[in-house]
Length: 64
Length: 312
Image (cartoon, rainbow over all chains, first blue to last red; front, side):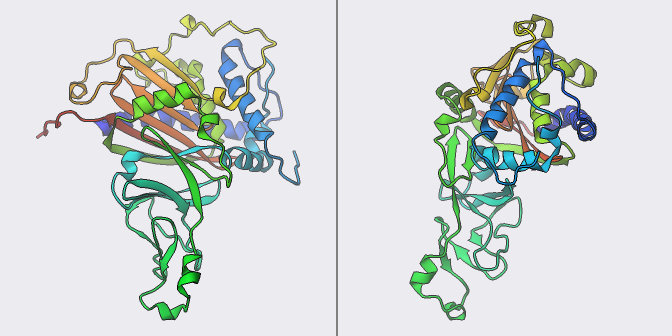
């Protein structure tokens, strides 16, 4: 039953991974801004928390 | 709404190095669940933020050490999971439960260390914190209290729900060419499900997006105001619609969240799902490079209350 559970999850995950790998290629080729809709506040909150953590450490030789 | 990140945050080595230092070498990161380390000398090895680690059970106490022998820097535990003492396979340097070298070879004279010199040689140890069945490691020399990362309510719920994880589990991992953040964002994004997973996502897990009160609740100028670390972890519960009654569910412990799809997005990189109060699915997105991540996946049931019938 655990195996059935995993196989079921992996079918969906494989679709996600295929999409994310294609997305990564597009991200590397893009310098445009993302466009977020009203439903995506959860993403912005994740990004806000991520950026707040990055500010806790400053590495030398920063180059953006 | 204005974006906070740019494509460069997902693709450049600069941002990867920054987040390795500020997040993965500084915060509490999930590295195991207790069923993986149930017995004396059970271990899990992994690389976290470039640091090879071994998480090992010694007489019921779980500790984390560098998985690199102090002698010639060989890997001490070579498999991802196993059961053996902390003995380097290269020259049999042997470390005790505190990571201290206890002997170097069958003939101690070969190395010529005094007992005092031997006692000073030890593996670097890292802080471990356990909530329920979840084992977290912190790579910092001065780890922040875990209560500063996960608030009291989150810790109490994780304790309550995951303490009853069964000893049987299935684990797999996949290395993909994508940034770890897109994996976590994808989990937080219910909108993609009816599009990308139109024919594969189980019907009883689907979110009624139109009924979600958070939609249309923000205007275009919205910016997150509270970026405090505990608020970065979120949880949610969705009532399962037309959930199938599965025969085995009567044989395992039923958690209070039965009938729901309970989720915890543990900042930074964990998606913990508890399905119908009787099974767990845990996804961990471990960054390997700006454009490469390892997705670890584990499924387990709640504790068995009766033996499962043998199938012919």
